[in-house]
Image (cartoon, rainbow, N blue to C red; front, top):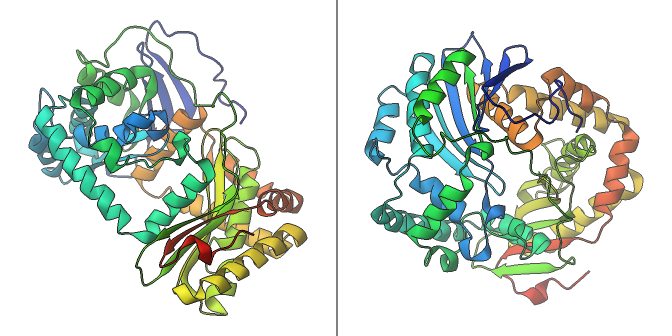
Length: 444
């Protein structure tokens, strides 16, 4: 992606540096390398704040698999200033909400409050992320919670099949491992290991604090600096970390079939292969193609498999994109006895689109779906906050709404058909969760 807003490689900031990126959007870099990005939306009466850390499960060694997610749980368990109860009670007392999530490439801790309570949200969230105690007793408590979460996930075959598929594509690479870790990695993980991971990875250059709503940028910066004063994130001069790029091509597995035998009433399948990374310029064409294939009720797969034949309740396609890799898959959930027909129809449709392409009407509809989903997804302060943080953390650049819509509009039929021929004609892997064994799905 090209760099915008004249933000080339910055010199090490000797002092606070603030720039206006777009109308209502400002970015400040603190001397420590921590970044603060805000969007002022005066017409709202709420504000959303997120502390985003550019560390996720792909940054873990096999023995520390699940450490990022484990840490996400622990940072709400208490600081030198607040107990776990106080962290949640202070926000809930003003009608706000807090939560967090971990992905393969970043972790987010966020709060949504009334605009008048943004100062409280800044203080609580910065305190939790910057000054967690990680008490041994809390480690043991959350270990049990996470093991139950892992077990619960295994009882959800519709979720498990996506993890099986991801592992089939990436194998033992960190992108192929579970974000939650496994029972084998979580059980022996010690408090010292988690605390060391916390101290080494949660550093100012890796952190973006984003806020959107009825706010003033300078006030947010002042509140953040006050909240972080004297903590481990109040450090000396450093450069902000650049977007993750990946140093070499991510290795992938040869196409194959993986079956997890489960005594389920419904079979769950994902058929797909290697996709593209998030900085690939073809991502706009892929977004259009994805909607044409399986992005909604008018999509080819939904019409063919559900509407015309009633073979599955849920069928859709999707693309997952990382800094240096990606995958593309089609999911379906159906009765075990119908799985062969569903797979045959899916393969036939993918082959048809790969060979013959799609028509102008489908492309127009696919573009409309991409644009509509993006714009409608920006209707609340939480999504606006997430957009700011992801742009800064993952791209180092904030594309305007009009520019993004223009990029989608500029997608041509040749571009859509080219990426269809590239991705859909490749040999594909198959992940299955249901009452089957490997012999039920011979290699193709």
